[in-house]
Image (cartoon, rainbow, N blue to C red; front, side, top):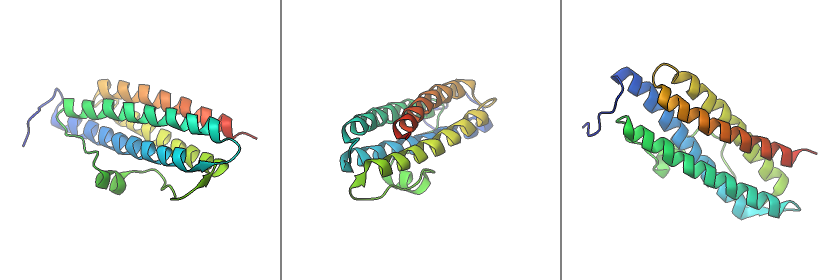
Length: 157
């Protein structure tokens, strides 16, 4: 059933919807894993990393909402259910339990690297399909790259 038709031709909507859905689940996964790291973190860089991870969670959650609303706007209902995130996220899994600050940085930085690569592919995929969505993906990716840089700088020895 189609409730919202949106402004795009069907083929462009399909490409754009796929990019938005993929970005949505990756961002939701990132927000959950960064929050898990935030809660289970220990080590000498606890405080600074604890706060930095909270910033990352807010960024991921805010942008997931923006991208989900764009998907709805083009007539593609977003799917952010936990089972969907678990089944379709392209980010590395995060372990349970306490995690040392250096290990958390390794894992979150690797997730960010993967996410940025995936977002850049989505930018390319939406070049002709939907420049409006492409513009949103560019903004999101720019902020994710900034967060990735900050994590790398925190981790530098």
